[in-house]
Length: 111
Length: 121
Image (cartoon, rainbow over all chains, first blue to last red; front, top):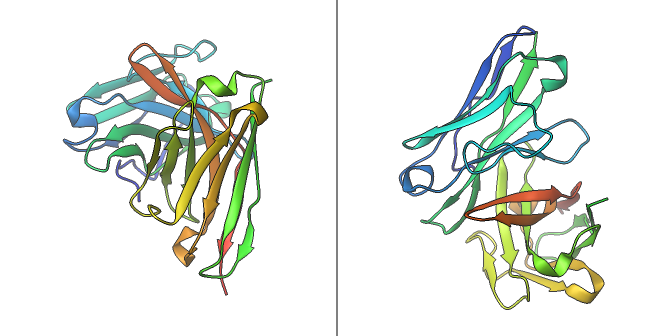
């Protein structure tokens, strides 16, 4: 089902920086469609972290950032904290379906 | 508080039907495109269907086209998903989500907690 590929897991010690990749294709990210990033904590609804590839909604700390290049996008979390331990997924649009597409989800573990 | 609450999930036999509902509160429901997204056990998220502000336009994933019908009742702040000819592969947690838009950008927010649909004999 998932059209966008993410690593199953990433980990880092408190204070470190981790990045999560989101790899798509020429019909979604590579076609210029924006990428959004969400965080999902156990038992809670997904929370928007990044919209339009690089924009943070109010309330999201600036240690969280997004980028996009070619057919991929990335989410970076700097100064890793225990509260960052969660699932993260990317989302975009795919013209070949057509419809919205999601990433395979990445579990971030704080060591 | 901005909130979406799904209901209507349950256990149904293959070939059966189910109707999901999503009740909205805390925002102007009638101003936004609404969407159903699902997540099968151990799988990633899958977009299922979207409906325009007035309900005039509906969109479906190929996997559900012809079997599922999305609708909305703006005065009741409610979104629905009528699911027919259900298959085992439709087993999933079904979320409703609001499609927010700002300038050229759009994103899903808020999301509901989800309602579980299990298709099994």
